[in-house]
Structure formats: structure tokens, C-alpha cells
Length: 274
Image (cartoon, rainbow, N blue to C red; front, side, top):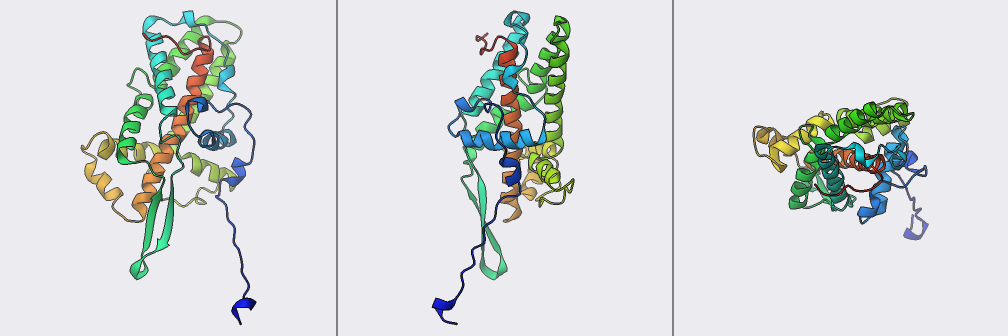
């Protein structure tokens, strides 16, 4: 067959989560006004909206700024400020990916594309940890408890609605710490088949984050040998790096969404510094 007679077959593919990304968002993506690339915010919020029944956090029934005491106001204000800073980071505004090509002797070469530099990841992880770690005064759990306590004390007609909304947000965080968002989306698209998405490790998101934070990014401590072994494989290592980044990114958007809820709860404004 001559070169002119050869047929050219074009194969087009799309990511498994494409069906979940087709739906339009019903509300403004929280804190995207503080970022550089709105499409990064939209991507994660389309997946979150596909999985969870979360209402627009900006419509949370107000509790009133005066309902906060000084210590609570400091924690809420710190949480909102951290989320605002987080929204502007290169990590939240990047689309990291991996490319594959055949290497010598039947090996595969993996290249990370648009992956943030190490110093950016370490800075991001230090900031993000303040929202993630329950013991931090400006953490998601602490400010969630503050809103829940104040709501129980108010006793107005919107109290049940607030309580139900707060319950949903906490459940979302808990589920994302147990199973990655992409794995949840893949299972939902495939009728519960959790083996549909190739897994690059056996850790749940909480274990994965702990390994990266305390084996390398923040502390080089007891987990350092486990971390070194975890990322040593030239193919699996880069894919595991992306998994860690995506885990933190998905939770980040939940945290920023809750910051939008806080602004609505307490008069719709970022609180003054304390």
C-alpha cells in the first residue's frame, strides 16, 4: 500500500470524569475572585457538585457579626484570611498532569507537567495544614464548631436549616478524607465500581496527606523512610505526587466554600483583624 493510500485513524479520548464536568454550576465558584484561573476553581466545583448536595454557601442564613465573641472572631477571621491566601496560590491555580513515553529497554518515562516547584508545595502545605489540622484554632473543624454552637444558641426559625447545612459540609470533609474525590466520582459514574479508576497506591487521602506532610514537606521525621520508599518508583512516584496534590486541592475548595459560608453567616464581610 502506497503512502497516499494509507488510512489515517484519529482516536480521541477524554478523561473519565468528563460526564461530571458537563453540568453547569448553579452558583459562583467560591473565592475564585481571589485566584488567577477561574477554570481551576470550576473544575473542582463541578466534581464536588456532581457528588454532593451542597447549596450556595453565600446564601447561608446570617447569624450576625455581633454573635461572635473576641476569641471566636479571631478564629473565624483567621480561617477566612487563610482561605483567601490559599485561593491565590500557584497550586490552586495550576493544572498539573503527567505525560508518558516509552523509555529504553521497555521502560516508561513519566514527566510531570505544570507541577508546582518544591518550595511552592512546601509553602502551600504549611498554609493548608492550618485549615486541615483539627488542633489549629483557625481550622475547618474549629470554625465549624463555632458556627454550630452559635446557631444552637440563636434559636431562630433558620436554626434547623443552618444545622442541616453544617452537617453536610462536615460530612463532605469526612468523605474526602476517607476516599479521593475522583475515586468517588468514578464510582458514581460506574454504578459503584470503585475499581474503575486506576489506583497508584493503597493509602486513603488522610494517610496520603500525613505521609507527605510529615515525611517530607513539613517535617522530615518518623515517616521519612516510608515517604522515600513511597515515591521511589520512577513511574508510580510522580503519579503519587499528583494524587497528593489533588487530595489537597479538592479539600481546599471545600475549605474555601466554607469560608464563603462564614462570610454569609457573619454579615457577609471579611471580619476585621483581631
